[in-house]
Image (tube, rainbow, N blue to C red; front, side):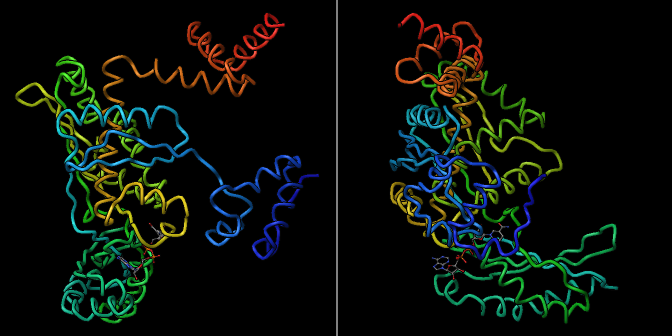
Length: 424
Ligand code: NAD
């Protein structure tokens, strides 16, 4: 008989009881169940307060990327990621960029957009004008919701209203522009959007449906650029190769998706290490990459007059150094201390520089030696470990598989067996 996943009041049960139910449901062994209780630096009780229905915490490796020079300041970069090669590539790329003075960054003020959807308006153009007429009242109502944010210099600063044409008729979308200072801002903006909705309903005569932040944070952009001397990158041919690789991504969405994934490999690892909302950053990045209607590369790579490589990246970067889980998670707090950033803007700029570095690392590997060599070596090590190799056997098995170009679990097991026999 199949087991049911319906449990009334699962969330009300003590954590221990939830774990017992999952253990029975999935036939977990006692060892597996006790492993779930080992949550390291994130105590179970704290995890239980962060999200719902908690049974454990999920550890992923935290690495430190070195060599980063950003606006002439040295940074150590904490990166939380499960994928091999990323931290090494970021460190290597930062070393190359350092030869040209490192990364230089800027950012816009931390303005997020909150949308309020009004439908069923007979005269949407008149309604749009009315929203603008009541701008000061609407902004005041929004700011009344968050005196703390206002006291640190943030708050709703402006608004806009636009008419969109949809399959169910025209809609009036009012957009609050909220300066979120050091917070990512989703809770703050959503609260404001909800608070002003009845006012907008009244003045427009429409019916309000959604009141929510937009993750396409076009008013909260971070930018990074770097000039990498041709010698540092491996010569002018490599520079040309990287420029060609970029042009491929600029023109072809299939390549652009992977190009941008490379940027996010670096950026998201820092976003996770600081316990920021990586879904928000990913959604914003891809929407920004498609803002012209054609999904393209977020970064660009050029060759300057000297034949050196110049990379630049601009993307939405809604991260906080306060709020959300940033100050709850004990490791995130330490990650912020390692970074030594003083504001959300500085964090956003550092993350963008790391994204650009990661992009450089990947493009250089692709254009220069082919990314597969280094990657396969690490992949082979993982397969060797998964097949049961330990200690020096890990290197022996993985090297043999790389040499044979057969990086597979069955081959790893065969080699382990052979090694065991010869050692007897
Ligand atoms: P928050 O509400 O926890 O913290 C922000 C608040 O901190 C501000 O409203 C302000 O009152 C206060 N504050 C104190 N000092 C501040 C300073 N120096 N700068 C700014 N604010 C200061 O969190 P939040 O940042 O509003 O929301 C982030 C959370 O919202 C994340 O956990 C995210 O996952 C979640 N979320 C995201 C979405 C989305 O992206 N679509 C939607 C809903 C919720």
